[in-house]
Image (cartoon, rainbow, N blue to C red):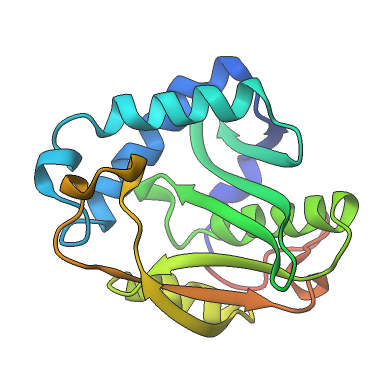
Length: 195
């Protein structure tokens, strides 16, 4: 495992971070969501769309947490968790994105652990879930290796409710955890394996 994640500093996001988060989010979608989201959306207004979403989320963060991983002055990754989002499945990891050159360094594992820790501290239940595109096989493998279980598959809702932003009828898979404790990595412990 690379030691590059050891230089990362983790902190809670604030409203001033919306632009950097939106840029990383849009870049991740452009790299991994082609074929599910329309090229016109990904190559067009995806950054503006993500900036509007993140500005709203960070202006009113009640019931959620957004945790940043920074390396030097650069945003290397982030995770956003919504506490108690679903009565059956628990807290929702609504986004987890790592810059492309930090994939497989353990940073994603650490961010998932921070989300689990936040849910343990602020949610009423221990369950945790997220959605991953069916086409994103690498992400499915990452979540499965960390104990996530595929429990259902549904059709993706279009971003912002605009059906022209989708390419066909893509599907997403719900990955779920009943117990968050295996995801939580203490600061002195190395990440269990590569993300």
